[in-house]
Image (cartoon, rainbow, N blue to C red; front, side):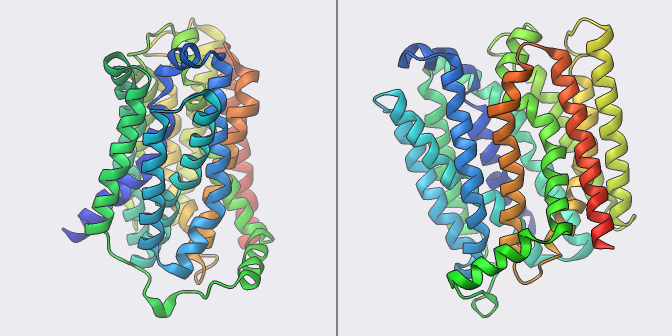
Length: 391
């Protein structure tokens, strides 16, 4: 029961990121009208949030190696909650942009530190199973967030999603304060010394095997995150859905993640990790091929236009726990730092997708499908690089 409680708390921390991204999507037009800016400028609140998230992700894990996992999570959740509630009373668009940056600086601690915490508590197939369980539960976030955001906007206007994010942050702070154990005892912590920390970063970032494992995760997730970053365009302009029908886009993505994570957790230990990765890439390739076929030969309509995304995310969820643990195990004494770099790579790729790739595929379903296929191929190449270097 204690492990189940910990899993639920960690899943909530991991889901905070998707909620911070997806919940306010339906409010983009209203926010643009309220602040007197374009929708593309409102999109920049996502890009700035992701850039801040990626930058601070470099440090959350390393700080938890020195000061403990629980303390870093609690401080970050406190800052996140206050900045989310401050967005409600932002006097102009520049204030809103600055507050979203602060949210990004604080919002990634739970996701980053929770991976290191899992690796502190579990080893081998048990760690893979537990990470898959957390992914499975937290996968509900991207499905619920845009749908909930649509109704919050209908009921309370554009401020509703930010009030919800503030309340969610406060609830998670209470859950961590009273229910989350500290997994890194003081005698195993690394002294906080800037020079030593810098050398540790350099050592990790110059490890080809580790860099390839980070890129495999980042590019693999980037395939479906392209659809997350452009959700208003895909849902409203390409699929012709309303602001309260975002679930048609997100439900296949999330159910694929949940089912893939459930399969990875149930079968952990039955196959070697690389077999999970091979199965995962097979499903990702199938999903990418079906997605291209839909936009090449058919008019995009739900549900057929979104079902291939579920096949893709099923494969990604099969492969991701094994790839994550393989990367963390390269640095057993600095698992927090390794988790930080994994999260940094993943979030930086997402930020580049939101800022650079999204405008290139705007209003084109075929370009979206091609982007998914390219990211899948890059992920496969990166994992091949990891295997050759690790061997």
